[in-house]
Amino acid sequence: MKNRLDRSKFFLGTYILRPYARTEAHIKDLADAGIDVVMCMQSDYEALDLFAKYGVGAIVNDVLPGWWGGDGDRAGQMAETNTWDKYDAGVAKFKDHPAIVGIDTGDEPSALDFPYYGRVMDYTERHFPGQFAYLNLYPNYASVSQNNDEQTVNQLGTPTYAEHIAKYCENVGTDYICYDFYMYSASVAGAYENLRIVADAARDTGRSMWIVLQVNSNKPAVWITENQLRFQAYTAMAFGTESIIWACWTAGWWHNQVVDENGEKTEQYEKLKTVNLEIKGFADTYMKYRRTSTHFIGFGENHPDLRMLAYEPKESLSTGIFFDVTAPQPIVVGQMVGKDADDGYALMIAAADDAQDVDNKSYEVTFRVYDRVVTVYRGGTAEVLLPDADGVYHVPMTSSAGALVTAK
Image (cartoon, rainbow, N blue to C red; front, side):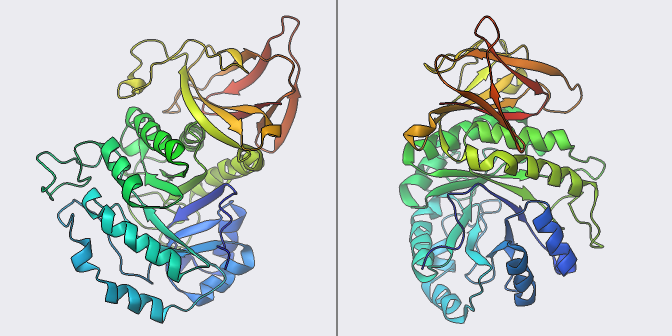
């Protein structure tokens, strides 16, 4: 049986759909806002019928025994807690539905549990051929091991985050790496370094990168802006992410969700819908390319957003296809190559001058390309570019915007 979620397509997800937001109108709103998949859904078959009607998939978390790393006090104990008889019982009671595209196996495990998790993920894929096994990992602000491999009271279970991801790749055979990072509850600098570590690991092991980002906020008085949604999404795409999952749609954790506890849409609904539909407007073209590297251009020396980053910023970039890529403001640029040779090469450009959305600007990214057709994609538009009299191409940008530029 073929897996129901076509993971060759860019997909947009969200976490948590409470029972008060499972009417037909609510689920239509999900679909209208560009949501393809709901994570942490339950086997509510009446709601799942509506999911199927509107083309929304569900990853259900009430089939197999759950696991959450939490503060790390249970690290290394998954095998003795989630025994195989519990998984067998979950398989036996499972009632399938065409809207169920994935089986949630847990969240944020310690590296000490990765060997067992590898077996669990294989088991899940084998017993649920129409679905895939879903697992999300910690971000890099989780606590690390301070002593040795026997220590269990820590979250990552490794001395560094890079080792955590390496251990995952060594032990767990998924074709993706998914992790969460809540930039506006942590830091932009940490987000960049987390993207670097996971994106490079995904590239080097032939996996897709997925990321969970925030549409809600950890402070009641703070609402994530539309441009902050863009900033999170497009910087992640400059690192080659192939899925963005927004937390949270309804009450899950924190404040200012997309739908409030009364089932009413908040101001986050229209913001998220706008950004999601922008992404969907060029996602099919974006998915024709894979990321090879990412570059930070125009940040200058000692930029605070790069204080944790292992990459050195550049004043300009030349890739052998795109030459003298520059901008008067900071940009993050993903260097990409076509999955099919006929698709040529691409740059995914994310405007990175205003992460906090306090001083929006307009400016141009410039570069040279020789003997190729250059096209810029943004939202639902595609425009073939022509160089100026000096052979320079110009791509207008605004703060927090994103653009895919191809050269064939």
